Every structure is written in structure tokens, then in C-alpha cells.
Length: 347
Image (cartoon, rainbow, N blue to C red; front, top):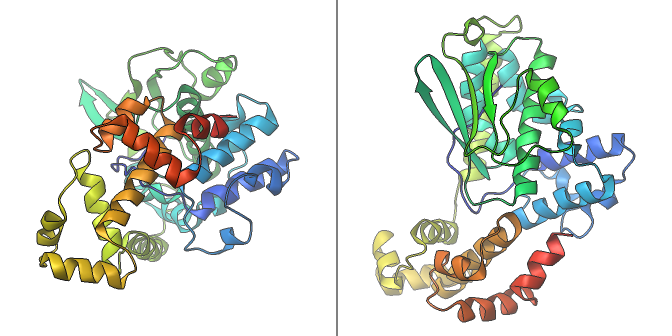
């Protein structure tokens, strides 16, 4: 199985390819795109723009829609079965052309966030003769979301390996923190071992010296690999680039919370006077106050949609000394209370 170890960002967005994959899989099951995208700001036309970024609230709404209309708790496993190499675009081409599983895994580690996003990071470690990967939610995800994302990873990566016609290292151990679902037999069938449910950690383990890590792929192609990697670097640069000041300020604010840096401290960080810093932001039609509010709003909505965190804890995470101030601000941002917002997206 191919896994990612890139750290997550709470402001992470999803690329259009992921949603297009969902639409194709759901269409195969008989559901129209309008049903899947209902209530989100995403439409089929916007998905044709390669620079489109799907924000987390829209992503959660789409996942919730799929689970609601399908009424299938094992939906993530079924969606994985519809995967085609083309769904992963140039990333699929790079792994297809890699030399072996080890190199393919490294490519996946570096770039799969372009497809999956970063709500769940993966920590690697060795113990004795075992190689372990721990799935670490970057925020305390709701159990049904954690289960969906874990099952999606299992299904997509297993299907991907099968379509490439190679043998991945044999899984010796697998544990998840949520209870065994009614479709727990699918775990047994796919992973071919007894999964530990209700564990303390989400872990997968295999023997470190498994020869399948190093067995050469029949599809290995150095020239194609080089071209694909160059494309992936370019796509990543586009996704991560910040041509203006405000996105960089938002990232710094994000990294600083729950400690809220003063305007003067931000100016120093960007090697400007406070006056010059404010003028540059004004040229981008924004301000320190507006950017701080945007970061807090994005984080608050993400926490409400993906976690079970209380309003008090969210307020602390966002640097508020009083939860009442957060509640008041949230009503101004969204037009609804925090409770109403969470309940609306949980339907």
C-alpha cells in the first residue's frame, strides 16, 4: 500500500481530480452529479479549471451527500473499485513509470496530497523487523469521517496496486481506532488478515525486508518518470506559490495560532515597517484584521465539520479568550450559529 507522510495544513484544499473521481464513481452507481454536489459551491464547470481548489466545507458536504444518497456505509470501499490510473493524472503516470515499490511509495509520499489532501498525515517508524505507518488525523476527526477516509485509502491504494499489476509488501498488522463496522468482512477480504478495531492507534505494519519493496516493475520507464516528476513539481509550485503578500500572511497567522501575533510583529517578519506592511495589504484590498478573521473563519468551519471539538476548545485553538466572542464572530461570518452550522453539514 502506498502512503503519504507529508504534514497537514488546516487550510488544505482538495484538487478537482478528487471530486471528478467521486462524480464518475457515483454516476456508475446511478447517482447524478447534481445530487453529489448539492449544497456546495462546486459545479461541473468549475471542476474543468485545473486551478480550482475545493475548500474543506464543500468537500465535507460532498462526502456527506454521497453517504446520504447511497445509504451505503461501505461506500468508500466501493468507490475505490472505480479507480482508473487516469483519475490520478500525472501522479498515476509517475508511479506507473517508477522502478519499484519503494520508489513509487516515495513519489506517493511527496505528491498524493494533490489528490487526497492532508486531513490525515502518516508517521513512519520501525520496530524490530517491522515497518509501521501510523495514520494521524491532524484534528480529532468525527468517527464516520475517519472511517470513510481510512477505507478510501485502503480501497484506492489496493485498486491502484492491482491495476499496476504488482505485488505490494504483505500487510502483517492493521489497527484502527473506531469500532468494527457492519461491513468489517470487507477489511478481512481486502487486507487478508485480522484487523484490530477499537485500538488506540491507526497502524499498518509489514516486514521491513519484504522483497516486494525492491522488485522491479515491468512498467518501469526512466524517461517517462522524469517527465512526470517535472510536471508534478510544476503543479506543486502552482499550488503552493504565493504571488501576493496576503496568502503568506494568512499562512503565518495559521502557524502562530492560538497565539495571535501583533501587527507590528508580522511587519517585522516580512522585513517591513508597520506602515509599509499595512499599505501593501491595502493594495491587495485587505488588512491584518480581515486576514485574521478569514483564517479564524476557515479554521472554525473546518473544526466544526471534521471534528467533535467543543466551541470552548475551538475558541482556545483560535486565540479567543472568551468563547462568546467566537460565537458572535461566527454568526457574523456565516449567518448561523456554530451549532446550526455543524448540524446542517452533518445531515
